Length: 277
Ligand code: ATR
Image 1 (cartoon, rainbow, N blue to C red):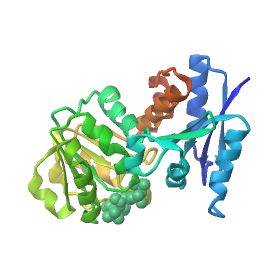
Image 2: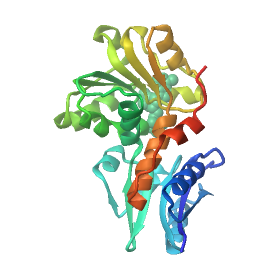
Image 3: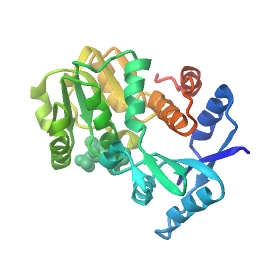
């Protein structure tokens, strides 16, 4: 019987997940169907009911996107440490009546940076802008990649400080405000994990953080040259990326988790890439 999977979000019309997982299934010869479900926003319990109904009718797993990542975490029976730290999940697996939750966004991002862009993070100075869900999902995988320093910056600096304190035993992480950045020198990699690009805004980051041999990564995808990437380009940064590689790599992690086989990602990334310029 064909195994069923779905992505749930609201709105969901823009999702690339059915296309990505459809290509993975074709490439690896897996007998599975993957659809998109518009999850209910109201009443509060309706999201969990929709997920349970999908599982009860033979669903094997789901991807979860905005605005349900926190609700999906809250309803899970088991979740990984990464998911616990993020307080949010993007993948569910239904097994023996249990809901198991994972957050693959951060490892997808690290894999895109290290493997696809060819920039190992070990020994590098890394700057992360933002302390919301997107940043939180990436912190543990980033520290596991052993940067020499991971600096977390946020407008509300208390949020960044709380995260840095929570993770201080896991690696060299420190928090600061945007006003402190001028004094902090250059970074090998700067990642924009704020939601500023969704509204065409620029986080108040000074160009002095970028280095010529360095890289700038924008988590949003398909938004072309965002104000953050433009600033980095004008500062002479040589490697730029938006989140298309992360999107495909997190999908590959979920596919492997569900099906036990890792798909090739290069052709799918190329197919979904929108030129930045
Ligand atoms: P997400 O799940 O996308 O991370 P979120 O949890 O709402 O969304 O977090 C949004 C993040 O983007 C926060 O770190 C927010 O900073 P504050 O916590 O200080 O509000 C950050 N952010 C949003 N707009 C921004 C802007 N124009 N400049 C800088 N940071 C911004």
